Amino acid sequence: QVQWDFSQKYSAKLLIICGLTLTIISFTGLLIKLPSITEGILSAVLIIGAIVVVLVKTEKAIKSKFDS
Image (cartoon, rainbow, N blue to C red):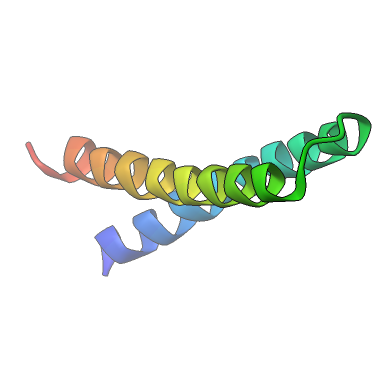
C-alpha cells in the first residue's frame, strides 16, 4: 500500500509536468507551420515519449526509495 501511494503521487506530479510541457510545445506549434503528417507524427512521438518518461522515472523512484 505504501509503494502504491508513493507511486501514484510521484507519477501524478510527473504527469502534470509533462502535460504542461506538451501544452507549451503545442502553443509553439501554432507559430510554426508544419505539414499535417509531420505534425501528427511529432505529436504521437512526444506523447509516447512523455508516457515512457513517466513510467521509467516512476519505476526508478520506487526502486530507489524501497529497495534498500
